[in-house]
Length: 192
Length: 251
Image (cartoon, rainbow over all chains, first blue to last red; front, side, top):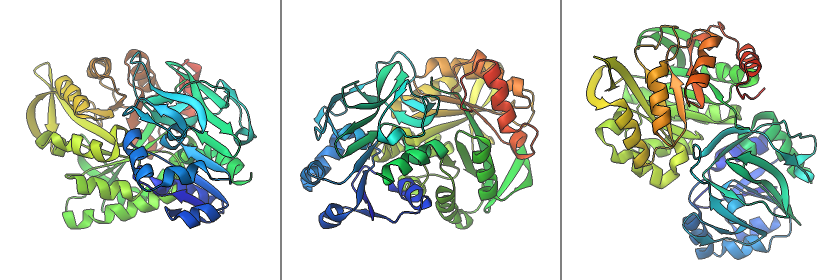
């Protein structure tokens, strides 16, 4: 069973639909025992970083997430919360990935919204994916480049489009909204 | 590189797709789910569903349609029409829409933009603006283009962004349904004067029109309905055309 973390910053419907369309059972839950026993966990996120972190801490979900041993996939805000800190609401993150989340400089339209491709891809999530493939992004904050990078994208500046470290995976873009490319990336995660 | 977005719009009435000309003369144009799936297969970058159902009672079926759309397509989609409150927005977003668009209700109650943004974030809120050039000034209209508001389109767009709107959907009523091209002047002015993405709408008739709006304005998306519905411009052909003209596009 694939667990999708339920919290105050998740639009979980599309993630759930995408996983089901790939033939997997998915459950949206914040039940700690269900999360711990899930085969894999998806940590989605749409919303504001500091209020999402507060919510996770209040329910003890921050410690639960940090100690997960099965594959975890953070998406969008979920990825940003897995980093050390975020300038959005000036909050600490869960600190899995050793990188910081910053606001895009206002040198172009912000948010970065729409389909963008990669400048480099690497690692398990990007099997059968090339740098020419586009995924759907929508974000005003970005994770800085770091050593745990799995994909980079350029918008205003180069940033981390995906990260990978041990059992933790993360994408800034929305694979569940990225048509066939996104489904392939989700499939790669589900088949780990 | 970030790609320009091609966005087919499906006007929905009583659960069916319809198409009007100059905001009037409604014709049936098919099943929304079937059309949506076809567009996604052809390469639509996003979809827009605009509910023009007249009665409140029938409008309630919209969230059921949104649930079905969300389970069938895997590109982002926006739902607009008749969203008058935070509760209306919540119902549509909970049903699976990525964004909602508001128009008349935001004009009557600008705080609604901020209320929805505070709950769901800017990226969820598209401010739709219907504008018509009257005496060389671009004025905002509400109520499906029927009621003049006295608002200046550029100022209203800027105010909407200040209140939190994450995107502007700009429809020129002078151009809508004419197939004579997008309103380049107002699209250029607004896209250069707000910090958020602008989608141009109204007037698409040829592939060149899409090129013009991307080449001459800062719009990052172009929306059209009938040229796609009736197959006059196949989306793959359009995208190949734009790509050849060096417009960044997802193929």
